[in-house]
Image 1 (cartoon, rainbow, N blue to C red):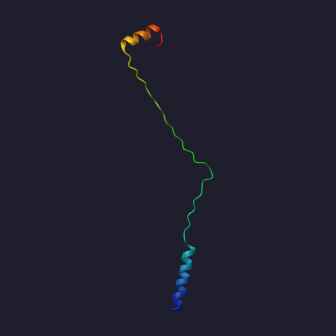
Image 2: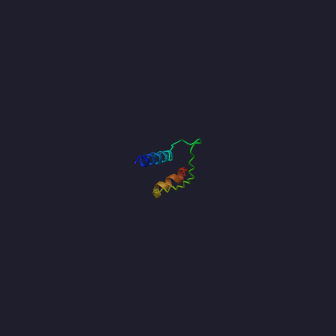
Image 3: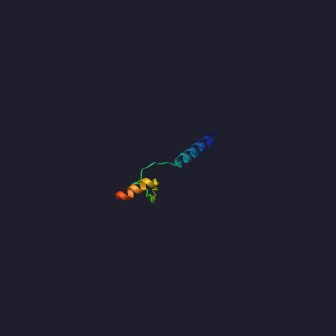
Length: 61
């Protein structure tokens, strides 16, 4: 009986010594996020013909 208790104590101490540890640590270098984004846009303006004539005559085009 005592032998079983001692063996359980030895086994439990060995298992406690092999328990994994988890560490949360910040990296030494900063984290870089590169975003390669191409933005294309097109603006379409619809103008009334009468207003278009006025703009063309005034030279604002």
